[in-house]
Amino acid sequence: MTFLLVSGLLFLIGAIFGSFLNVIIYRTVNDESWVWGRSKCENCLKQIAWYDNIPVISFLILRARCRWCRKPISFTHPVLEFLTGALFVWWYWAGSFFFQLTQRPFQTLQPLFWLTVGVILLAIFFADLLYYQIPDILSGSLLIITIAYRVALTLFGVMQLRDLGFAVMAVVLGVLFFGSLFLITKGKGMGLGDVKIAAPLALLVGWPGFLVTVFGAFVMGAVVALSLVVAKRRKFGQVVPFGPFLIVGTFVALLWGDQLVAWYLTLI
Ligand SMILES: [Zn+2]
Figure (cartoon, protein in one colour):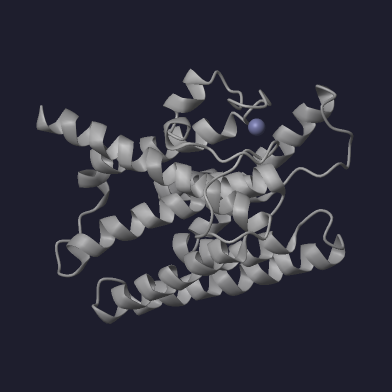
């Protein structure tokens, strides 16, 4: 019973966070202040009342349209809200499996760190998917908290210095790799945003996990881009943002990276 209550509450909190993420992403790419001003309809600029701004529910009640001008509201709003809520619930359910550090302060720091990382990764995924942009505030804060967390783990002896060294190597290789792709394709194949998130993602998953991230991202990117061309939704050579694939690749590497690397090594 408590379990269900906590799950429901966490979903709600997560959905509210997701709603904030929508606002942060929208205001960042449109150069608006984060803090000031209530949310407005992107079309008629009328302020959105609180009762029209309830995560997921308002979208359903309004049947995906602005109350005033009837312009469709993007379905990505409730999707991001739902996914953030789901992330919070999953974090709570799967937490005992993943968060096994019992040493202070990591018994609280570890779950908090990964929840924050999950939220930022979701935001980056949607920002790049919708606006072809990865706000610096997102890649920057991801980099800062990941450095802080990795350094703290190493100082407390939870992470081996050797593993930190490998993770730093992954960062250098990742930035060089995406940096040269950016230069070679003159920013068309790979954006500067991809170069900027390569560093925190590499530090997050370490080595050889980052190989799984990058390889997975390229495979998924190729499959999706080809499907879009076949379905005539995109012309060949048209831009498909790469950030979302890097984020999915990172989730895959974090969850199954070790198994995938071990499996690959049995093949060669
Ligand atoms: Zn409107």
